[in-house]
Length: 204
Image 1 (tube, rainbow, N blue to C red):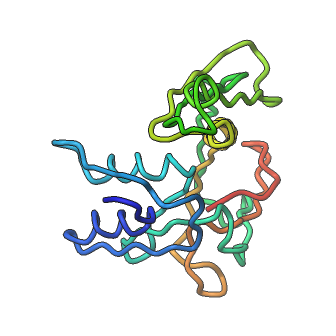
Image 2: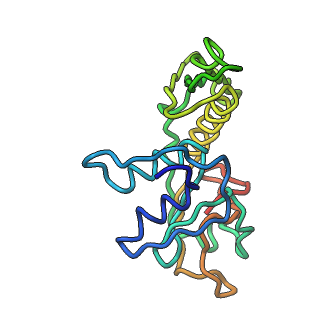
Image 3: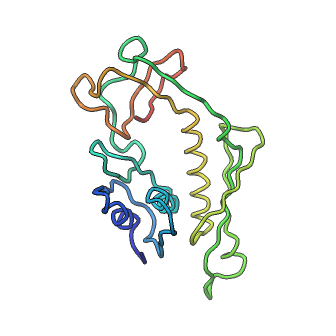
């Protein structure tokens, strides 16, 4: 594929399996070039695509795919409250995925007005205020990268990993809330849980 939107390429990859792709958020420029590597799984090819623009992809209630803005679906009607509607809950709090500094390295093709080190040594650096023990993660960005896109990827990596560290899984009674709406994906839900020390807004 040449000069296509990420969603267009995703739709073409998913179409043979009867899966549709919906877009609620699409950032970045068109993809200059994307080729499926021999033997590459569709999900791995899609993951390479969404990494370029730091996009978040989830499934829908019907099993299709959607590109989303985090929490853009709004708030849940019910809260998750220990002793009320929570059957069980768990969390790992795995700090092995956290780093104090995130460095993303990349490069792009040079042109007459931008060449040499400025095009071949793009770098983005983001430090974490959440995890401060000295621990470095260096990521080699693929494709055409600038200082701006490397910085955006470094910040996305930090925020995503910190969110994964705080991930909690709740089991509730049934698929629907008290107003009969489904527990929708990508919605904010307020929790009140003294055991997991959760009293805040989280994502479903």
